Length: 135
Image 1 (spheres, rainbow, N blue to C red):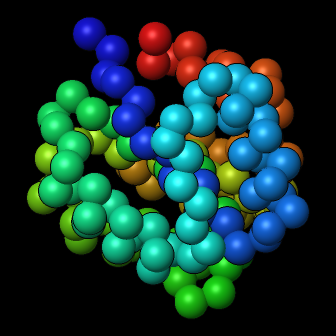
Image 2: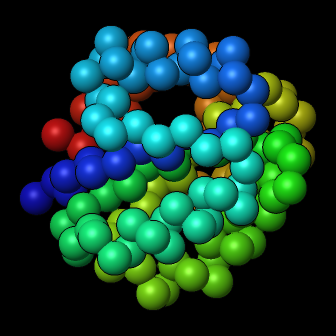
């Protein structure tokens, strides 16, 4: 049985990109609720707080930029590794980056928590493709 997407975390410090991506999520009907966070530290804190309200069959999708202040995407993945075992729900992480550096792409493919590496900007077709994986 597919898991229910409960929450989407859009983790990126770029306001213009977030505005555009939020509109795409709304258009795709995969936007409820969508929470915008500006760095990896905020995202880790949010995931920890969601652990108090989500259940085993709930799923959180994280769209994670790599280059952010305070805690970047790689730092988020390191911190997530430390808390993942204690979560009551599932988390699927999609790297959403403007980087086309082959090293970044390869590094993300080697991370067991990363479902896919998507180059910005996100497209409605990609969101629908992701949505269909869970329906």
